[in-house]
Image (cartoon, rainbow, N blue to C red; front, side):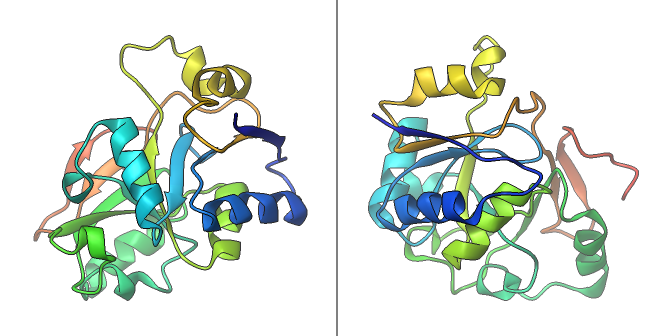
Length: 206
């Protein structure tokens, strides 16, 4: 049975964030708010947790397209190959914000993702998500809980999310109603930006 905790976005309580981080460090799975839809996440360095997320999403871990949720762009080189100035300027303009950027993967990627040529990087404009990653000290991997064939309330209302997910995860954060629109996905791994999915983020920024 998952824990269900209330955290306020305006001023996240550090003690509550510490509880979430403790769950992540122990290999737990969390459902947490972003600036778009609620996400399912775990510690990027915990193999068992990563495998649990892959099983839930019914994908092979090494072939998964999970996003890396980062606090900011400061440790980007741990996960991404060196990028040119124009690419970095796009990231600086857009983040934090409702975008997922596909970038060329570094050789130093965590073990399960070693063979991936690209990775999806997210810096959500959400104080709760950022504080979790900051206190954890490294990114969490994330995938949205959005399902095309689901009633939309089940992916936006935290109480209904908890009802549906409490046997699958270890902690659900109630931060109020989430959005029902996913992030805009931009592929920056080639010469020109490619819009992979148009979501919440404006395209005018590009």
